[in-house]
Figure 1 (cartoon, rainbow, N blue to C red):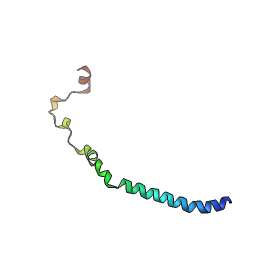
Figure 2: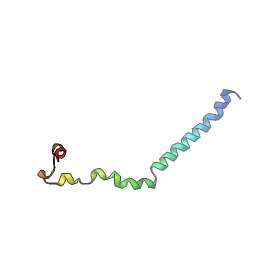
Figure 3: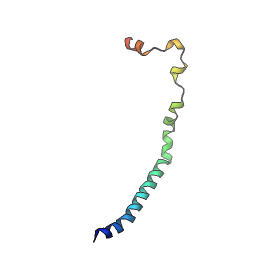
Figure 4: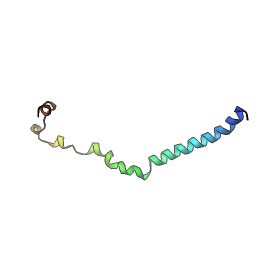
Length: 67
């Protein structure tokens, strides 16, 4: 078996394998399992307790070192 005939057989098989893996990754990415990460995805939009605190109640980093 020459190298050219090996490539003639291997190239179509390799293309199909790569395409199937690509489609599998897409299906896995957009599957229902990703809904479990919805809570984590909304964390940046949740209100931060430090932003709603009165101005004098938050300590600076230097005050936290000495405490």
